[in-house]
Image (cartoon, rainbow, N blue to C red; front, side, top):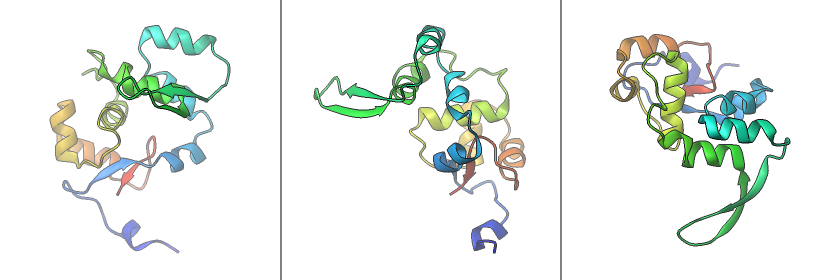
Length: 140
């Protein structure tokens, strides 16, 4: 049975975000996809690492230690902050996905995404607003 939200066609003001659980269930290589977005320094570091996903993460402001995914942490806290993280020549879906990495996966609509990546909002909507799901990017 289709959910009510699946029957509504997204518009320019429809909010999207990355559904991480969907992505993990649909793509067994999701960590490899994320690793491809790492900066060169961390790509090399994670290429040599084992499959260890969880590691101790230390908050530099509070000193609090928590367990988390090291690759995701480095991607968000370091690599996404590097100049050129979103390249004008990158595939559209990759650029949209990277915007969600940068903004902590807060929901954004096609107009807001267009402002961040410099592509037309209607093009973004035609790409991510279909029944096909790319990298877990789905309407909220």
